[in-house]
Length: 124
Image 1 (cartoon, rainbow, N blue to C red):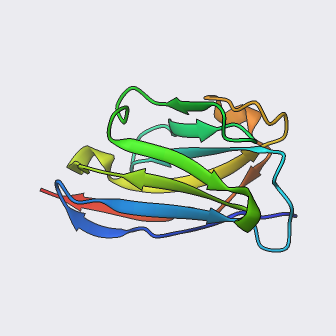
Image 2: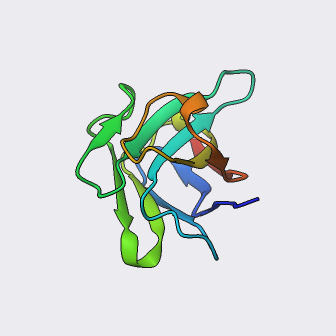
């Protein structure tokens, strides 16, 4: 099954920045939207950000607006999540997903393809 591969996670301190990448090696997802979700231990999966297939529309969860930026490079078949001013409650496993309509969605059930996630840990 087609798979997305996240990278860029790590351990940082509050106020630091990280950029996550979401690649799709060997698969063309250029006309699919990409979404980012995260899940902290004991909590439900939370929508973080999404970008439509051409990048014209972006969506953000309320808790990350103004701090996170989603983007994509169609030529590289890769999406990115720039995260600034990270806080301890941003800690979790971050998942990339692809949604076939290309429009973008804040709902995880709209996404057909998922990566395995990358851990982001923010210490205070």
